[in-house]
Image 1 (cartoon, one colour):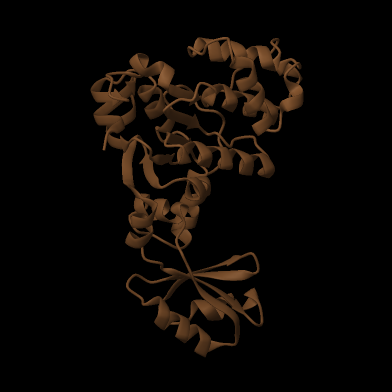
Image 2: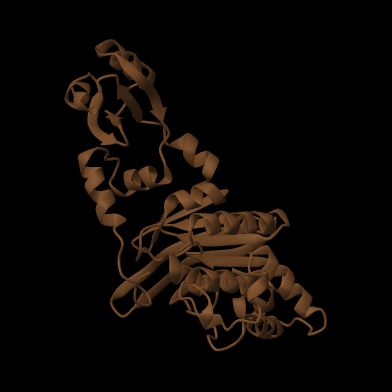
Length: 327
């Protein structure tokens, strides 16, 4: 299968800071990949190198069979992390301009623009100035600008940032449609459950290094569940008693239930029976690890429980927008 993006041993520094170190990637055409990791992990720097906005200090990189994205620019759609539109231009004129920059003929361009605006529920704003739109509406206009020319490779950096749940769902469906048409899609996010909802393949990046690169199915099979969700009839006040059950490493109250992290090597089925024997329960079920759980386990060296919860809070705390090279 042909590769949409290939990277071998790619490194990028900004002064003394190493933003990306030794990244190897092979993204086949037609795949949908998620780059995930906390803010500052190196995701945006990696994307900027794919886009030839930045150039690696060393290593090899190809995009759509060419040595750089510059040679394939009209076949790529890119939604950058830094949002930017021509605020004084009318929406329709802005999208016409962007289409022309991507090599589309003027004839037939306006109907294409109007069709896309209709698909993102913005058919009535084409005569409004971009600055008159809400942040979420502007973001949808920028998404249209990135796919208007029917690119083969679509790269979206934090595409769901700032969108409400309804528009997140709309954007997810549009991404799925483009992928269903055979397009290669790469998107970056620090909100890992978004990648679980959209991607076939996950690349985890931490401190500029790739720590995981596999299909979502393989990842789920590789990381066995070591947590249960239990709901004692007497409520979460029984957390101390649950913690005393053999094989339990740590207990955390979550949404009216208890997340029970098991000791390494403990059989979840046996632990469930022990918990049921220990007290009356409304619910006892295996909790499948999320990508966030898996990421924490990888970067913490297998820790779960209180130490891992502290690490989770530190890694995924909201941070100000990163300087170039820090993300």
